[in-house]
Length: 143
Image (cartoon, one colour):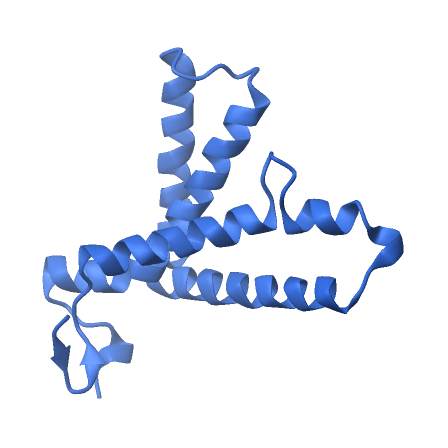
């Protein structure tokens, strides 16, 4: 990665992949259809909540706050709406082309979770991608 004035100015494929994987881990750790998630852990143990559950919940909440804030700053509300529309129509296309059945709730859940991961993962990376494509800096990048 190249540096300019002490700030990172480029994002390689590995950096993008790390952000996308981190988003996927965050989403799947929060909820997944395999019932191996924070949601299931807490909902199945409501009568015995403890400090580790609270700590894990706060850690997940911090992760979500970081990803959502970065995504909204990078993509903006219009960008998030466009990304949701893109993925929504992609799901519609997959159903219409019989790639996935609308009756397969497990598959739909995974598709939605992966799409949420892609939106927030790209949101974490979009400023770098836009800078590489256009050469434009964000206001936050200027010293």
